[in-house]
Image 1 (cartoon, rainbow, N blue to C red):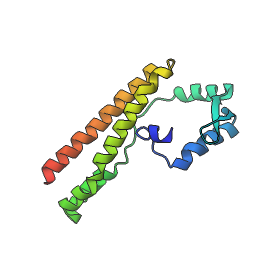
Image 2: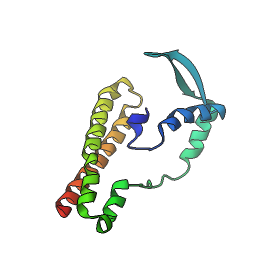
Image 3: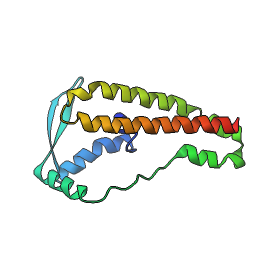
Image 4: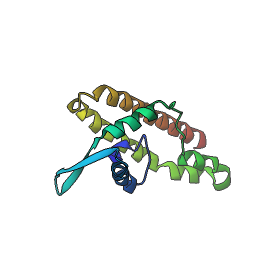
Length: 147
């Protein structure tokens, strides 16, 4: 889950596992252990209290996400460190973009196994693909301008 959701929400790996436990302690989730490939896995279910909290949260207006963009900050330092240094530091983005695209492909291949959520997941995947495409286009533009 942590690796698949990274494009929408960035948190330390430990947080992806700690948060359900925190929500369970608050009574918003309940858990049960089920066999996994190598060990038992916790499977969480939303409780009535959790549904009520979710409904309350849904009443709050959605806001545009804050973007903490390391690559943008690096570009803004180009006049201080040199354009080639910035370009060198941005090279790894291509590999990360390819990795995210591959994970989106894998996620889309299994959405039909969750029919009740398929429509919502596909809407989010299309947004993710547009975000990835925007980053690719931005990276292309930066490379053209700085080379």
